[in-house]
Length: 146
Image (cartoon, rainbow, N blue to C red; front, side):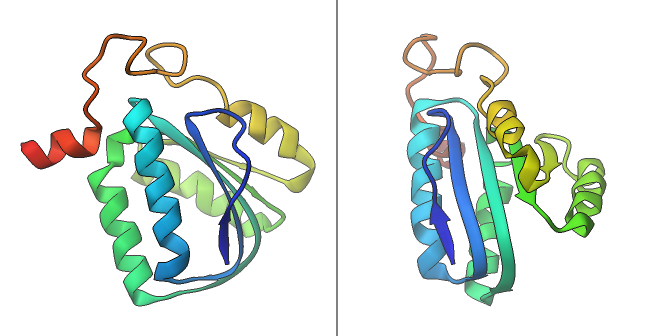
């Protein structure tokens, strides 16, 4: 099950993972990301992982497609997990995707993870589109017009 958590900042989507992921669980997460991207140039993710499960093929394809369409729209990802092997995967992923800064935190470092991911994105205090006088159009909308 993938559920939304209370976010530490408006540009952060916070999640809790405990088990498997299907399309029904992924849909509100994507909607939340889109809503945050409508207000910010870049957003960040915080994922508290209690337990991994299977992801359905439809959810996997949707997740990969969304991630590819929004590669430059994510600033940071904080992963909180007691799984030490995930720390190694996180380190390896830094070499594959350089557009997002990813860090692994143990459950004891939860407070530090929340503080780190809540830091404003580069480019200003929260990269708020309205306050910075930027185009109010979402990055997704810009992408579809191209």
